[in-house]
Length: 238
Image 1 (cartoon, rainbow, N blue to C red):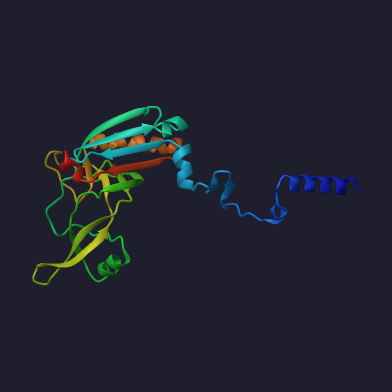
Image 2 (cartoon, one colour):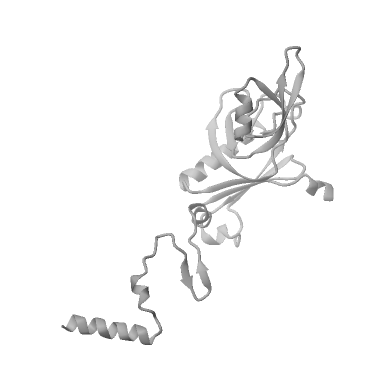
């Protein structure tokens, strides 16, 4: 009897405060937006949470594409917001010179490109590393002339695609999205080496960068590792 009376008193108090009884019957899903005096609050996704709670490695290629600045950010909240300096800043000499060819590998990033690739061997005219803000997807050892490490990204660019005719001519097939853009080294001298669009570092530098990324991910598996590639137009505006 006392339990019933207590419940009745509680309900009356809530009604007096303006809270509708329907609030007791409302079922809220775990991801439903929360209501506040300031409006609807949308829950953060996993990537957004990681950007606040985890460490970070932020890389930026300059518009001239000959310098890569790497900021190693501490996992403290203030550091992630940029209120205190990075715990480490590295600067590497790089280049993004591409080979003049129509026979570079094609890594299709669209359904149309994959269908075209299934019809026979294709080649591409390499394009420079795509502009944008991209994630580091893999860091692994590489034991060929492009080693000692391969740093993969999720960058997607557009390339001209060609098919080799029976007479040896390269027939233009169109422009398609292409993946496979990475950061790595080259066994040829740095000042003359070229790539199919990847960013080229010196061997000792790519090894140092790889260790920074590996250590950062070991300390925090949710760490955000990004590379920003600005528009070449920024260089023209200077």
